[in-house]
Length: 362
Image 1 (cartoon, rainbow, N blue to C red):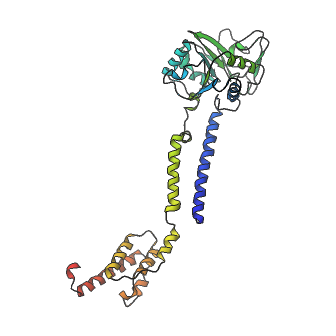
Image 2 (image 1 turned 90 degrees about the vertical axis):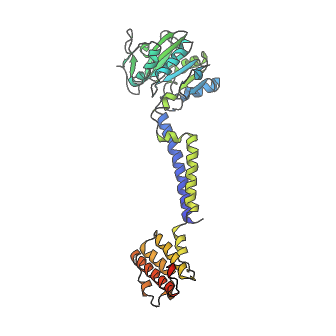
Image 3 (image 1 turned 45 degrees about the vertical axis):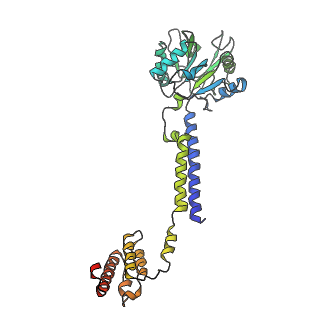
């Protein structure tokens, strides 16, 4: 294999590697901006997932990566967590989630700003929960707030410390900034429950190891059944071409076609210097003027090379015995000269035929 083909193969391999690296990087950047089990940064739930899998097996905490076209994905699920979604669920999906809660499910809804809270409103309407949010006047960037609990609160026991982090709070009548009640709201709906959590979940990566958050998360996991954490409403919106490339159903056929195309250009297409070598070969002798004229006509229609190369090529096809004077052949410098000389050859051919009495075929 010559150097050019090796170079082309190197480019192909580099393109594939670039795609794989860039696709993985894009997916990870997107995941790191979500409250997702795929996020290993502070706002993610990767540590909670690993903790649950280590202590209760991989069926304890699962991800839900499809839209709720029906209630089947939630069957057998005790806890469904929808945390700071990047897309608002439809009214139909909200109604399905509401029916699941009323039948006995525990719904965890998380939000870290006014935008993510607004995306949860379809579900709150379906459950007839009327709440609003307000800014946290005690919030400091990258500084979690600690609460020493005098009595039990949710999964936290009396005497434990809850560490929370949120720029907004639930707007409730009996709630003042600096109180843990402003971060949570628990409502009974039918036979089920809904829990709203302001800010990062206390079981997120950044907060799980602080205070007694891990102990509280352990109690929640131990006293409930199967968890499902929504991922669909994190990754459905803001899709790009890279997300499409991430699907093997699309990627494999496209890569196959790309490899076939590159293989054709590398192995099936004649290099230019190979063509020049063919042109430099000694031309065969023509037995008749008719054969010569056919070759000239074909050459006149193939003008892919530049004028000088084309002229040189056609000069090589013309045997010197056609004219006693070779000057007309040597003076061909461009396509115009070539066309003129071709016309002279045709006239010469005609005169030969006339002499042989072939006028009817001229």
